[in-house]
Each structure stands twice: as C-alpha cells, then as structure tokens.
Length: 420
Image (cartoon, rainbow, N blue to C red; front, side):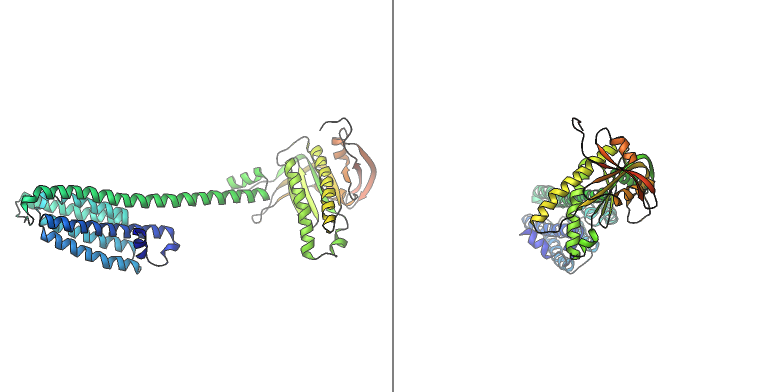
C-alpha cells in the first residue's frame, strides 16, 4: 500500500532512469512519513493543549499536499526537497518560540532539518539549512540570555508529558527517517551490485571475444599498452588446408548452403586446434590457416602440427559420412605444412587481426597447392623434425610458383612402437 502511494506521486517517465527513480521515491517517502508523524503530533499537541502547534502542524500538512502533486507533475528534486524542509523549519521554530524558546523541548528537532536536507538534496542544501538552523538556535539563545519573554502556550501542568513526548518524537523521527534512507541506500547498493555483475559479465564477454580474435599474450599486451609489436620466431610450423574442387562444387550450391558447409567443417577444425593449443590465423575463402610454436615458442611445434593434420583428416572422414547420410555435399582437403622462421603480430589500428608473414608462410601455401586430396604434404625442413616419429614418402623436388623446386614429402602415419 505504502509503495503504491509513493509510486503514485513519482513523475511519469522517471522509471526509465533507475537513479532518478530512487531519489524521487526517497523524497516522496520522507514527505509522506513526516505527514503521518505530524498527524500523530496533532493528537499529542491536543493532549497537552498546545493550540499554536496544532495550527502550524495542520498548515504544514496542507503545505505537503501541493508539494507532492507538484512532484508528480515533474518538479525538480532539489526544489521539492527544499520546499519540504522549509515547511519543517518553520514548524519547528514556531513551536520552539511558543513553548519557551531556548528551553523548549522542541529544540532538538532543529538538528533534523540539516541532516534530512543533506540526504535528500545534497551538500549545498545541507550546508544552507545547517546555517539557518544554527542561526535560529543562536537567536533563541541570545533572546533567552536577555530574558526575552517567550510565551508558554501549552498547559504547563503537562510540561513533563510535553518533554517526554518530544523526546520520544525525536527518537521516532530520526529512526523512521534513518530507516527510509537505509532502505534507499540498500536499494541503491543492490542496483549497483546488479550493474557490477552486468559489467563483469560484459567484460567477460569482451574478453572472450578478444581472445577469439587475438592470442591471450597479444591481447594482454594490447590492453596494457594500447598497441602491440611484431614478434620474430626462429622456428614455427604453418599449416594451410583447402577444399579440393571447391569452386566447381560450390557452383552447384546456393550461397547459404555453401557458407553452411564451410562453417561446419571449419568449426570442426577450430575444436581440434583448440585441443592442441595452437593458433588459428585466419580463413580465406575455403583456406584454413593455423600455426604452432607461437605466440609462445615451442620446440615440438612440427610434431604437434602433424598430429593436428591427421586429426583434420580423420574428422573430415567422420563428418563426410554424416553429411552423406543427410544428403549434403562432401569435401576433401589438401594439407600443406612448412617449418621455419617467421614474423607474427597485429598491424593497423582498426579491426585487429593476428597475422603471420615470411617465406615460411609462403612456402606452406605452395605445399598445400601441390598436395593431394586426403594427404599431408610437408617440406624438407618439417620432414627433418618429424621423420623419427612419422614415416614419410619422398616426392622429389617439385616446382612451386615463385619458389622454384622444393623438396616435398607425404606423411604416411605414425611409426609402429612409437609413443607420442
């Protein structure tokens, strides 16, 4: 019920801004609670026969009603807070004046206005009302010092009751308002916690996206310095693969079917290289390019890449069988692998892409072009590193575009009685 009443006076459209909504709800709640508090004190002032206070309380309560409706119509939060506090300050000071001045039991209520102003309207309003109430207290003190005849317009026989009621009242008021602000603070903290969770979740998504584009080491370097530098590697192994007769097969498919087929194969390759911890460099059309031995150098990168290549071939067989059952087109791949020095890094300032350069890369591409379907074609440099583990067939020196004659080998499989 109380929440519905508070929401009734919230300006329309405010709920789009959670922080604005929280502040408006805090101001409206404070005004309504003070209204109810004054209603209680109307009864108490009647008990002690304090007609001036009854009148002032009633006028302040009437003052609160248009303030609430002005808030509903979009009044500024600070203005609304100050109008509320102004009415409270007038009420308190009039009650003090007509109940004995400096020795009035209402005096402690002067402390409430600056605190409420600070919490509702901010530091400027808090300092302003602190100054006003301090001046009022000083004025009452000076007037009492010079024996100003403050009227005691309540039943003096009930003076003890009046002191007790004021003491209880200040405790009630401070506790209830503190409770309102505590609830508001907790709501704000909960919102903040939710936002922090969202920020953390979005950051994790961003991290994952960045790691899907760049190696972790390069990603960290980019985040720390805002740029990356190219790195040279004395030995890395590069693999190129492409689909055999891709163009002619692709002409028989719709663009959507072609892209769907490529995606299915490439996703399978992605899972394989992830298991081995090697880097996918990029895909160009039907070509899939990856490298091992970077960004963290390793000595067994050639051996790892041969295992990856065999896993590619095995995965192709399994996938082709499933696609054939579904009536989908199937592909075969050629694989070319070369080992040697290269440079890797990120260039440019937009659309970051981790790439590799060097003669080693170009040779791997030529090995793939001169390969055969379902075979792993490697260079002499790769052969020297894997020949003790994987038996190979020498193909001789084969002419490659812009490279002259290159020693090429087909990898036949794993040697017997060799543990890898």
